[in-house]
Amino acid sequence: MTIYEYLSIGGSLLGTIVVVASLIYVRRQTAFLAEQTKMQSRTMINNIYMTLEASILDIDVHFITHNEVRPFFYDGKDISKRDSQELQRKIQGVAELLLDYFDHVLTLYDLFSTQQKQLFITPDDESRSGLKDYKKLLEFKENWDKWIKEMFSTSPVLRRYFEENTKWYIPELKKLYEESPKTNPDDGE
Image: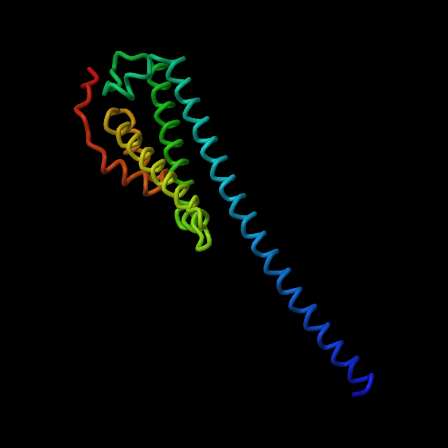
């Protein structure tokens, strides 16, 4: 064999080694990028939870600072002709605030519903922590649905405002409205 043949074989082997090493490197980088993306997605979901929780605390504070409107949403009380215009406007405002909030929560879940499982569960998720996160997400959604139905159930004001403005809200909210039992409201007289 000539030197040229040895160099040719050596160059081919070196080229093959470089290609294999490059493929291994690309595979590792892709796996690292996939893990980073998964972590960022989980972080984003956690941030959404925190935002939603902060918003519900704001609503709680509103009910505490304006406790005169609370019975209209939790105790089945309806607006009366004797209620002042200011109180009626406040009650209508809170109804819109709650419905907008419900719509916001359900919209976020709707946006993630097709991606949730992919974000949390991957074939190589040996620890199954992704499955645990996904189940938590479903439980969280189930609890929100219960709360929304209960609010519809206990508030004739909320139901009426929703009926008058159904077109503003997503179909999922209408579904929960229809599934909620209706209590006998105060007659408002």
